[in-house]
Image 1: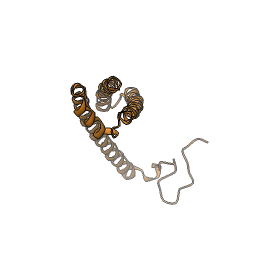
Image 2 (image 1 turned 90 degrees about the vertical axis):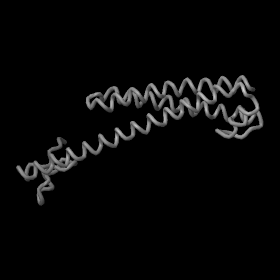
Image 3 (image 1 turned 120 degrees about the vertical axis):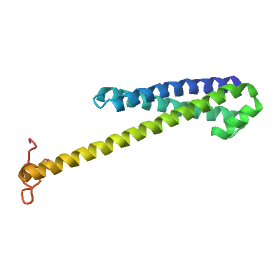
Length: 157
C-alpha cells in the first residue's frame, strides 16, 4: 500500500513539473501576441495534464481509503505522519503545486491585461471610425452601425 502511494505521489510530482513547463510555454505565447499556435498547444497540453492529475488524485484517494485514511490533503498528511519516508516526495509535491499555482495566476494576469488592451484598442478604433465616417461602421454582427441602417450587412451569405 505504501509503495503504491509513494509511486502515485511521484507520478503526481512529475505531472506537475510538466504542467509548470506548459505554463512557461503559455507565458511565452501570451507575451508574443503573434504566437496563437503556441498558445493553443500550451492550453491543450495543460488540459491533458490537468485530466491526468485528476485521475492520479482519484487513484491517491482510493489508496488512502484502502489504508483507512481520509481522502485528499488531510489523508495524505496522515499517511506522511505514519510513514515518514513519504515526507520528501510529499513536500516536493506541495512545493511544485505552489509554483504551478503562482505561474497560473501570473498567466491569468497576462490574459486579463491582454483582454483590457484589446478592448481599449477596439474602443479607440471604433471612436476614430465614428468620427471619420459614421456610415462606414459595422456592429459585431456585420450590420451598419449608423442608426436606421440595421438592414445593411457586410457578412456574405
